[in-house]
Length: 160
Image 1 (cartoon, one colour):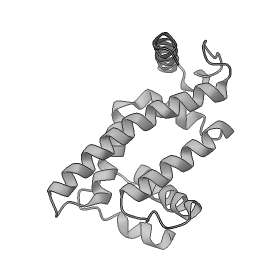
Image 2 (image 1 turned 135 degrees about the horizontal axis):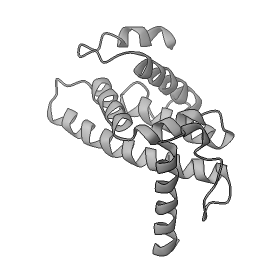
Image 3 (image 1 turned 180 degrees about the vertical axis):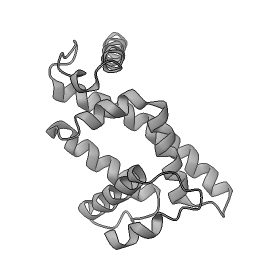
């Protein structure tokens, strides 16, 4: 991919997000060039989300390493929530199209990353199990209001 291609893709993604501010459910109905179809566009949007999320999680975990009493689950939760707040339109578009087959592998990858980063799973476990743990974690994270004490984590344990 050339720099020109990269910039064209970024411009198209930004146009889609600008349009999504008005109507998230219709954001990917008109696929701008250089994308060939909605599946390719949705994967690019998820990649953008994943870049933002991964960066925040890495920063949060680095801070957790420096402060041994901090909790990895809390750090990953805060990073996810900060990313969602900073990228609300992007998150809305992805949520509106979460059932699209193009996002299935993307979602599983995100779920595995969350489970591993939070310390809820190990790399040695089967990928399917790691994704299941990550999905349960993500569902609780999204369904539960912020709790500075982290009491919602007790609800996570029966999910396994």
